[in-house]
Length: 315
Image (cartoon, rainbow, N blue to C red; front, side):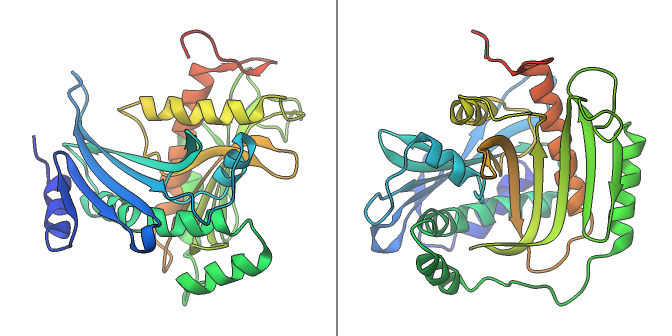
């Protein structure tokens, strides 16, 4: 079944010099930096409105890239744009997925999100991987892309007030300031906030506007912080497994960010950065709601009270 999202994608790409594949498009990048693919994979799930999965992947040529070990890839995932990095046979890859729905109410947003990821995933992703080499290389890569680093107009305060109100209506403890909205989702127990009980097991959800990514310019950043008193010994394995589990889902929120290792302590967390040349009304609420659904999935799938993330033979 072809829906409007797919029709618009094909219309937008038909004039570009891309290799047409059985289920999408393939692009070989200049200077042999890697290969990008966009696949529109049909989905048939009874009772679901999802009719296809748009999967955007980048396969990076290792020449010129630093060598990454498993924890290094997961630290890189804390800065990922347009999907999660992983290592396959020693080669760096990156994957993003977006569910395409027959009844999608925001067709333009979904189409533009998919096209932006297909066009920018590899060039931005490669520069993000390169920037860890040195501050000088980071500055070179930033200058190469020359992405906007500020906005010409301020964020609408009413947009963030509305986001907080919407989250509270859904039963979450939430608040906001001029450029940020945050909320908590209980992973176990009855306490809705760590502000009430520092030992409460809640996921802290945040969406920030006007954040400057080292390479990708200004945009929106959404994060999930988990209630770990100390980083688990197998933190890199945990985040890699969470990313893999997400890609096994079909009827799910967009997989544009990544679970990765955050802060100097390598604590598992989630981040999603969406570049934006200007403020977009409603995007902060959309992204923090994606985080709430993702945190609820984690709670129901792998979280064990007082233990944290515990994988079983079924996960």
